[in-house]
Image (cartoon, rainbow, N blue to C red; front, side):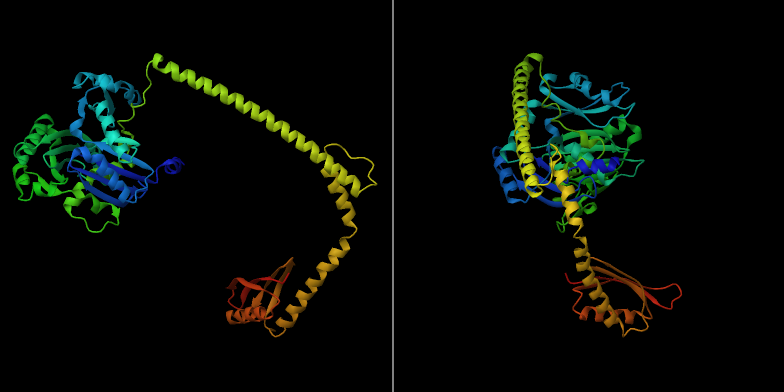
Length: 479
């Protein structure tokens, strides 16, 4: 029952939209909570960051986008991601306090931040993600200028994590490193037993391979039991990162290109590794709506948080006054409608009384409020004496049906009739015949009479002894 309710209220399609500094990538997925299918995808180059909204608007206008939910993402480089050790008994009580628990680790005043966290596990640090309100506002302005209103706002790192969980990657007992490479910036995620263990943003000022090796080495020192067993490469420039095998040689880990579109249903045709890397983040955003825990992550959660009592005073007064006016209008409309209905009822009852007395002048009096009931009783009483005419009229067609059937079935001496029922224009004919061919011949004869516009054979099967075929015809006689 609960799965039915979840599917009933789940979105039929979700659009994952990643607005980056160099590219805009979008993927629309239908039925994200059931068996997801990628409907369409697009990538738009952005040469000038000042023209991002214009490029987004052009891409939206050109594509046949029609999602029920829109999930966008902010680059992890513009957020603060921290692992915080918090003692908690009930995970539901964590959300109201996580923002203030992150205050000592925030690079900006906590009043300027919006904070949410990933799924929690008792005894392990809580991964909290914060973004400045100004950054979120700028992101929403760009989206709205491009004709998009996000329902949720996530982070590209969280999108990659959701994609990893959805596809069921990893060996289970070994951690996995996901490396997303996009120009001069990259992301490294380490997922251990389906838990996000590390998120780090890297700038490729030096050798990218060396930076990745250093990051994984530091993670191994900090978490000796979570050494990755493999590296998944994705992103716009992921295929070029390990073209010569240097990353695998330097880290000593198996390295392969991550091709998520090979694991989901789509009708986009053949897609090379670069194209799949460009669309990995928006695909994770769209599919993240169905991934347990991650689907609740939303940096817009606090956007409409309540202000102080002074800030709320004017809206509350306005709302109360509006409700009072609305209640007064509804009350007036109810009384007016009731009065109108009452007048119409009295007028109709008076007209019925006049018709009744005019039709049946012998009636001595009419009970108020029971005019229609008295009229129905009187009509039934008057028409009962003419019932014999209707019965005689109905008997004629019945005799005609019997005559037609007798004439046309006379040639089928081997056919035995078990039941004949005539009800209105419907005629049910049940019986037994020696073979299916005889049943077909009988059907043809009945159709050629011209008396039955419709002849339907609704059943024909051999009896248990295998000696005869039981059949059932439903005929419709002429009106």
